[in-house]
Amino acid sequence: MRKVNDMRIRFPQLLLTAIVMLILTGTAGSLRAQESCRIRVEAILAARQDAFVDPQLIHHIEALQSLFNFTSYRLLSSDHVDLSLGRSQTLTLPGNRRLKITLQNIRGKRADLALEMMKERLMVFNTRIQLLNKGSLFIGGPEYNAGNLIIRISGAY
Image 1: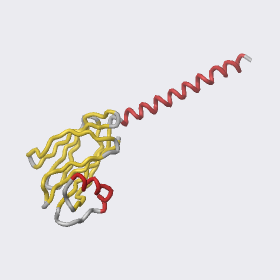
Image 2 (image 1 turned 120 degrees about the horizontal axis):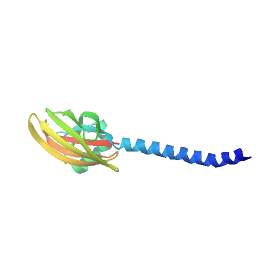
Image 3 (image 1 turned 180 degrees about the horizontal axis):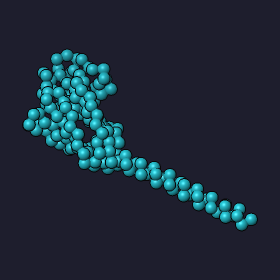
Image 4 (image 1 turned 45 degrees about the vertical axis):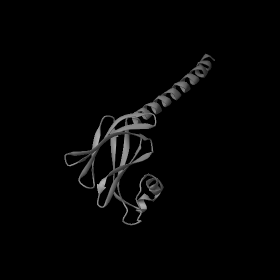
C-alpha cells in the first residue's frame, strides 16, 4: 500500500515539474524572439502626374493620402531583412540610394531602429524610429523621377 501512496504523491510533483518546464521552454522561446525581428522596406514613388494607384498599395492608400499630398502611388521595390540586436543591414533603394537599418532594442511591442539613408557619399537623412510589432510607418523621402520617394517600413517580432 505504501507504493500506491508514494505514487499519488509523486504524480502531482511530476505534473507540476512538467508544467514548469513547458512554461520555461515557452518563455525562453519568446525571449529569443525578442532579440530579432523581420523588417520589410517598400519604396514608393509618389507623384502628381496622374491618379494611378498601384494595386499592391491599395491597402495603404487611405494612410498615404491622409499623410501626403500626391495623386499617384507606385511601388518601386520591396525587400525584407532579418535583424538581430545591434546588427545592421543595408538595402539598395531607387536613385542610387542605400538605407542602413540597425536594430537597437526591442521593448515589449516596440522595436527601436536607427535609419541612415545615403546617396553616394552624402547623408540624405539619419533618424531613429520606434516600430510597433506588426505595425508600419511611412517616411516622406527625397525627390525622385518627377515625384518623391516614400519609404514604408513594417516589422514583426
